[in-house]
Image (cartoon, rainbow, N blue to C red; front, side, top):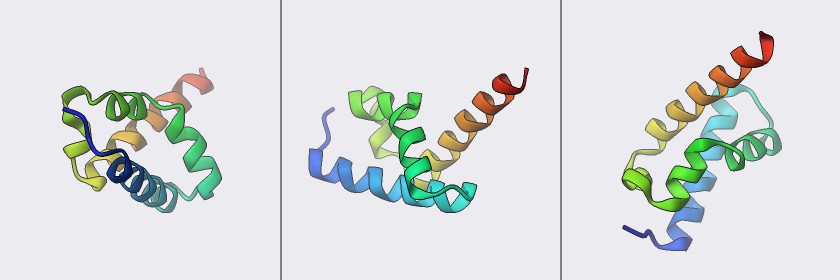
Length: 75
């Protein structure tokens, strides 16, 4: 299913803003991470209707992805 592009952009903005607040990042850092994340690819491509998930669910998923990447970089 394809989502309306304008609604997707609004969802991206909400998710990035909440991710920045929750993680203590600047909006620029959060936006850069988001656009390079697996989550963004899934939402953009409409896989599993990820765009239908709540903003909080997507932020939590993004936080998990961020933690995994940070763990890998420490090894």
